[in-house]
Amino acid sequence: MKLAIKIMAMAGILLFIQACDKDDINKIKIQNHDDNEMMTIMHNMMDEMMAMQMPPDPDNAFALMMRMHHQGAIDMANKELQSGDDAQMREMAQKIIKDQKAEIQELTTFLNGHVPHLNVPEFVTEQMKNMERSGRVTDLQIINGDTDHDFAMLMIQHHQNAIGNARLELIYGHESAMQTMAKNIIEKQDQEISEIQTWLLANKNR
Image (cartoon, rainbow, N blue to C red; front, side, top):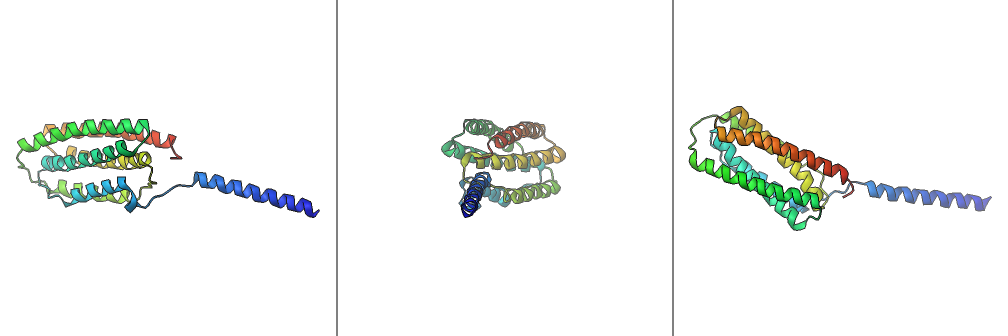
């Protein structure tokens, strides 16, 4: 009888250990934001954008903001190429660098040739609110130190912020060049968000 009890107890302990091991596998891994290089790039970009002096002309304000915003995406993508090892995320990073460098050139050309003349302070106010919301959501993101995972998580939020700014440009802006860019940003980055979400769902254990 005692032997049977001992066998049952050992079997229970073994099942408990196996369950714990399974829980450890499924447990969400978290890295402190202050220790994460990808998050540092995101925070630096957000801090610089919040510190910018925005003109009350919505088209110029949008161009200035998006130029810095695009550079943040390029910095994150370069970090992915430096440290990431997933082929799909590296390909996404290369695409982001190519597309956003081209758009930075367009934004710079516009800024060099367009003198601010409109006074729409509501645009800057709404733009700052969008940045503040994005900053709070960014600080709620779960990152784990895996470059591919963190690039994917933060690029979704980065793109969502860009889409928010682009929608404000469509409401308040007047210049066709910036209106067209805003529409392109919404379309392209919404598609990229979908692709990244699909990747994250297929790579839950990274």
